Length: 359
Ligand code: ATP
Image (cartoon, rainbow, N blue to C red; front, side, top):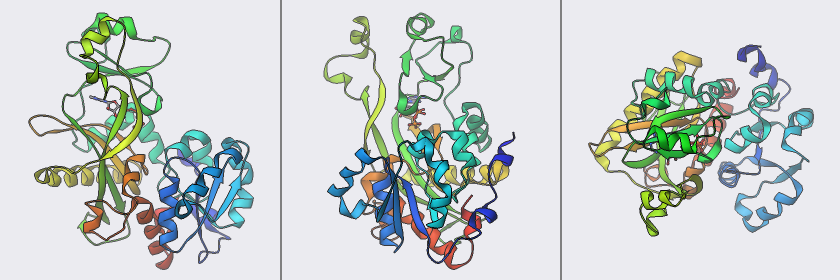
């Protein structure tokens, strides 16, 4: 079945909704503290879909706690409860764990209004389509090496669907690749780009026309971070990578946290240019990315950006900025990505534009 046929009509999903009484909901994981906190600041009621033994922790953070918990035994069961959730007028805010726990298929079919454009899922989760989108937007991506025998420089090998860099490895030659690869899993080989990593957090509104304007709507840069990844980011404390590799210890890329960062200012125009192109291409390809997205980049020593990935929803890297970032502070004090999402919904609610930003 084509993706389009799976996604329910937003008009139908919103029918029967009391639009003056919307509730912001998400799964209690990932960036939910920030989502609930931001929604609360904009005056929304919040609902957290959670599993019994995972929710106690919210008591530790009263300002990030949802007004109501909706308990499930398993996140995969959420589709069973759509009627009950619809009666509560919930708008789902998808985050990385939401899509992962529910599964991409179930997420596409979910009969609840969700923030953003669900069609983006197939474009970001398939590495070939993602490349078509980003290169089509004129962004520079790390070179892809189709045949491992052609490895002639340091490469990073990525298994498909591996989240948070799990199982990725570096190789410098075919021999090294062959020693480490698991042939049973599909993988992509990418040039390992030398440089500094910046994860850029944007917000695109198709309905608000102020600030940095695009052909349609406007683009904001809300913050940026660098991920803290184990063990690659700490290896130098005990020796060089090659020394360690000789004794069979290989660096890994599992994300354990996020570090706030501010970029050299002269690079900002390029940051906006890239964001703008990505949005414009997305409108052409699938009707547009809506709301928060993140470009994952490496800046090389000649100050060029290489973009190795896009995440098409709120990313954990925005979490250091619950009370604003050095960039969002220049838009409005106390503006997190979670709060910005709530503002977008509030604006759409007020101007009868909900169908433009939900799917
Ligand atoms: P997520 O979905 O959480 O964003 P992922 O599992 O899809 O992660 P990537 O983000 O593609 O994985 O890569 C994981 C990490 O590997 C990056 O954060 C970065 O540190 C490193 N990395 C990825 N691609 C490259 C590259 N081409 N050159 C250098 N480092 C890279």
